[in-house]
Length: 351
Image (cartoon, rainbow, N blue to C red; front, side, top):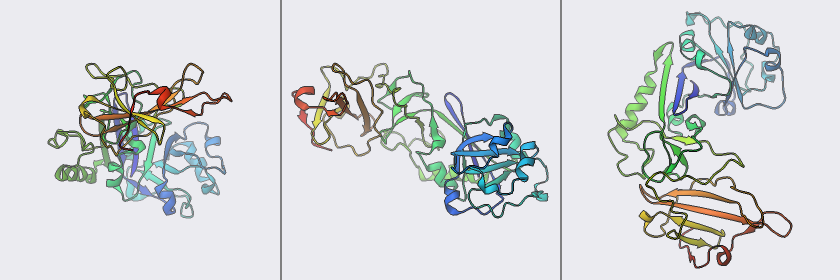
């Protein structure tokens, strides 16, 4: 299958098409066949140039374009720097299979073709830079792979982040401690112009097994006709220098700030841990999300900090913060101190 992600502002559109494998790639190249889409409709000479270093890109070619004609003239196709090549067929009768160039010796990356009926449904929406994946006989694992780039989305930077069960089109802290987005996931799959039975079978299996992708939330076992059968969208992590502390949503506490904040000190990591009032006390929490990038600059009067979250249940969320201070050499390597930064803090019981 060829899997293409077409992301709108609040919707992840995933278009899948059954493909025909034209060569015999190595197993390692099959598992690594994913990257950003690049179309070969322009700047053909540069895109068909041999390079030593493999790029994180999948090349897309229309078999009716000049680019494809130039491609067929390449003596060593394997010298191209891509993780995969997708060909859009331009003939109606697929049984004729008019592939007239030799691909059998190419093992470095997969070369696949998509039927005319399938490519007509997606080609007008394909753009450079879209995440694309070529998968082999592993339909279920891709759809259930929650941390796949397929489910990533650029979340609205200025929106609040809910600490409760999220409303539609809202950022929230997931059961794995990561920042998620309650976006709509729209997935379709076609095979020679017809719906793929595998996708519908997978949806029925998820429904029958009552699988939940966010099991820590109460009531997430609602009827499968209401609950989405796909993993929730993940917010793409902010780049260094662009991170901000989360904005609290209306009516929700900013539990890591203010005189009423509940926290403890972790001596082993020189960090401080906060918890929401619904937790009532420090609780053990196993599924911590990744650390954010550092926020702020390091001066004598200010210290950059980073954070991460852990969700224990529907309303119990913990947050850990690490600060760094300026050292004598001008670097920013000094750890926080309990006495200087958090006087009176109790010691944490859990790691």
